[in-house]
Amino acid sequence: MVKGVKSVDLTVLIDTSFNTVQSGFKFIIDGVQLVLGRLYDVRLAVANFHEVKFKLDQYIDEEDQLNALQNLSYRLQYGSRLAEGVHAVHTTIYNGSAGDRPGVQDVILVMLYTDDIIQESLEDSVAEAKSDGIHIIAVGIRTRSNHWQNILNMIVSEPLEDNQLIATSYEALLDMDKEIAEVIKRSIS
Image 1 (spheres, rainbow, N blue to C red):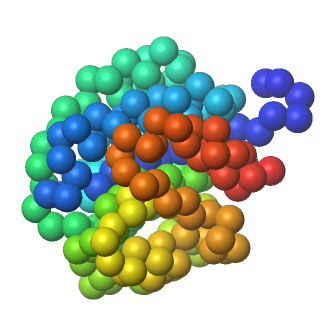
Image 2 (cartoon, helix red, strand yellow):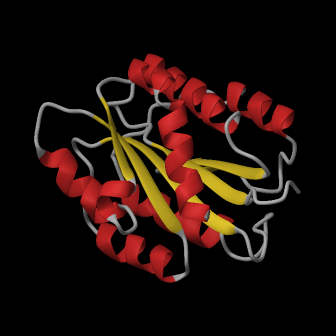
C-alpha cells in the first residue's frame, strides 16, 4: 500500500431501466473505467437495480476489473427500483464476505437517470445502508424535470452537496472522471 493513500471497496450501482439506453450504458461503463484509473487499491463490485453483476472478491487487480466492466452487457430492466438495488448491494456485497475488507470504506457510486425512480422503500434502504457505514455518492443524468434534486438528496451521504454530481448527458460522463474520483477520495479520507 502507498503511504497516505486509502483503499476503497467500491460498488457501482447502475440504472438499466428503459431511460438508460444501450449507448448510455456504454458511456457509464467507459466513465467508470476512467474513474478506476484515478483510484488506488480498489475492490470493485457492480450491480444494477435488479441484480448483482459481480462482487468485490471476483476481480482483484485493475486489469481484471477493467475487463470485467468491458464484458458487461446491457440488458433492459423494467422499473427503476433503486431501493432494491441499494438493499441488494448492502446485504449481498457489504455483508462481511464476498471481498468486503474490514477497515476499508464501503462506497456505493449510483449512476442513474433520475426520472421515474420508484421511491417505495427508498428512504429505508438508504438509511439502513448508511447506518452500517456505507457512503453513498450519486451521479445523476440531468433530466427535463426538477425531480432529480429530490432523488439525489434522498440517497446521498452527508454533506449532500459534496456527494452528488450532475451530468448533462451520458456522454458527459467521459469528462467527469476526475471529479467523480475526487468525490470518492474525499469519502475515504
